[in-house]
Amino acid sequence: MKGSNSMSSGYGSLEEDLDLEDQFFTAKSTLIRRAAKKYGIKNDAKQEIPKELSYQEIKKKIEDYNSEVSDCLGMKLSEDCTYTGFIKVHLKLQRPVTVNPTEGSDKKTSFYLPMDAVKQLHIISTTTVSEVIQGLLLKYMVIDNPQKFALYGQTQRDGQELVQKLPMQEHPLVLRLNAGPDASKLTFVLKENESQEVEWHAFSVPELQNFLTILEKEEQDRIKQVHAKYDRYRRKLKKALEEAEGKPG
Image 1: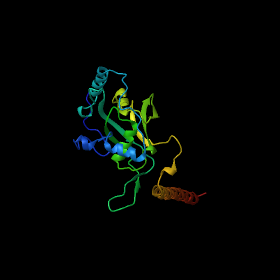
Image 2: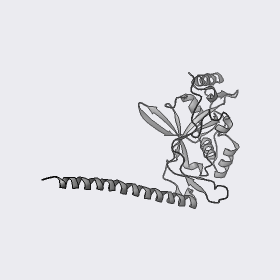
Image 3: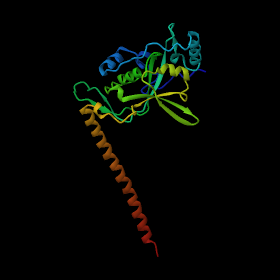
Image 4: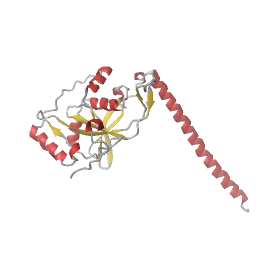
């Protein structure tokens, strides 16, 4: 059964732009290598997938996978047993991210990415979790250290959501092929790296100042909401009291 030709990428769909190189970002790129060099991230993973399956076995799995998705979202196998395909990543970031200054300004900007935005990435089977994270940050022009983020695998089992942090050297496309295209069996989610307490020293002074400004604004907004809530209760209670007092004893 073929899937729909339209699939959300967070900011558009395949129907809006058929140029896949513009619509999707190939995570394994020279930009990623530059980012890894900038942050001193070593990629010790061998650029080969494990040889547990033969070429014919991988080919059969890919044919089965492709039979369940639309043609433009299928996987393609190479003679060296590597293959390319698409993964969809949900962004669920609770904290603001930092982007480069806009033209004409030297001030970095912090803002919240849309909650549960979805981005399609076109990757190869040897692309690692670390490279996927770097690719996503580059796509959104985020300049925060990639080590502040983690990629999680989310599955549905017996009506429960199970979430597992993926190792940095894991290969998401291999996981996608093994799980099949069904999102209930595997969904990729980008979140903050919560394996330990927040390493505030990893943030720059402007970032910390921006966080304080955002927290103060959120605090004031919450105070206004609480005041408004209790003002409504107070008015209702006064009205009820007046009506009770006006009734004949």
